[in-house]
Amino acid sequence: MQNKKQDFFKKELRTLVECAVLIALGIALGYIKIQLGPQGGSVDIVMVPLFIIAFRHGPLWGVGSGLVYGLLKCILVGGIGWGLPSVLLDYVLAYGAVGVAGVFKGKQSLYELGVVLGGLLRFAVHFISGVTIYAITTSTDLFGMNFTNASLYSLVYNGSYMILNIILAVVIIFFLKKPLRKYI
Image (cartoon, rainbow, N blue to C red; front, top):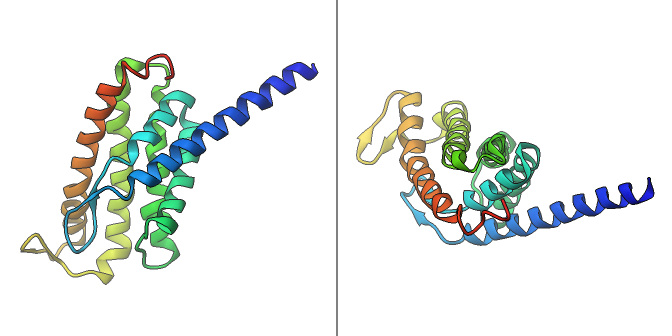
């Protein structure tokens, strides 16, 4: 009985350390980005380590790691927020949503679909934040266009960088599937 407990804690500790290392990798990758405009929004590959966690350990570890990553990103990489609600939505919950891709754990042929699911869920959280929080505080001028509808503004603004992030993550995960086969 004691050995089973020790094995369980050893496995959990190994998973925790692995997630911490991948979260740290995501934070480091957060400094390498292409800024799309003065309003914010950037193209980067920070979701890739979170997808690796989700595909390797499932949605519980994936969502948990995403929540931790989002909070750390806001603090360390210089997140911009309009108070606690925007920090929770745009960082903590948005990156936590990425971990839902872990529902495809063990289904390597569906990892790209998992990336799309996680990316779209992150987009949905950003969209909600844009409609509820940022619609009040930001200008409605974007990419040389003037928006009068907060939903359309949030769709165009968040969609402009999220579609690129999702495509980039799909391509990277596609190419990482074979080298990481024995680990995922």
